[in-house]
Length: 238
Image (cartoon, rainbow, N blue to C red; front, side, top):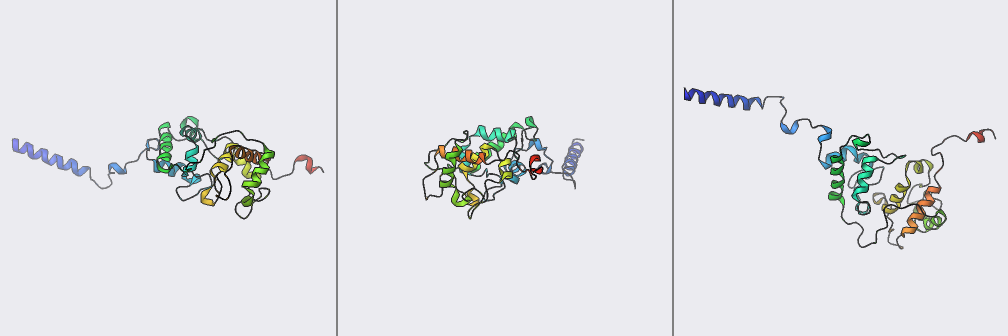
């Protein structure tokens, strides 16, 4: 009897093991993971960030997050806040569930930590860092600072030149916040040939005041109704 019982137990074990390998039965690694349970940085970044911000060596339409200079200037709290709440009036949406997005607070933390771990490498040497956030400065002084640091590429009036496109286009200025303009001036777009606030090495870097003043000059170029294709009502009567 004992031998029969042992044999029966062995058969049951074989059947159970075989059932776990039946055709069509998913393996543990193939089982569906709920989106809210994803904790892999690469997966989260690819699904939520790469479409606009690109990846390493692959620029996107928006500022690169794989930029050591950006990561040296923006602290974790700033990145977490922007990722969670988005930026009102721009194309940057809120991603946190608490703000109507799809990501949990833990997933936001994974993204922030992953950006820092993968792409933060100092990036600015011994240069003194200007503040990441500051109010726009003086637009009149900004015109002179723009002429000294930016006009060679973007044209005398910002309309575009041999080294860069227009930065006074109304639709562009209507889609970017004041801080977004400041970040662009500070960080540049190295993948597209635009240096950061330190310039291309042929002259001195921009001072913190000059950065704020150029931002003010750009803000002053923003039309009150960006993208408006029609003349105002009063102009139609003329």
